[in-house]
Amino acid sequence: ALVCVATVTALRLGALAFDRTDIFVDEAQYWLWGQRLDFGYYSKPPLIGWLIRLVTDLAGSDAPFWLRMPGACCMAGRR
Image (cartoon, rainbow, N blue to C red):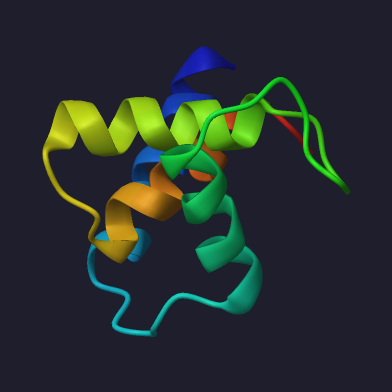
């Protein structure tokens, strides 16, 4: 089962790497939340902003792949 989860997650990340769409409004909003970290936001808890900030700081890039990567990894193992 873990091999299947790892395979699907790798396929999702591969699809993200070759995706050429611009970021959507909600993704831009989450990125802004990552720029100004807080303990909560108007419509969501803070974890999404914190994860995006962590990943973009570690990667050293604000490319769409890095903005979307935390969501793809968090979905690993979900149906």
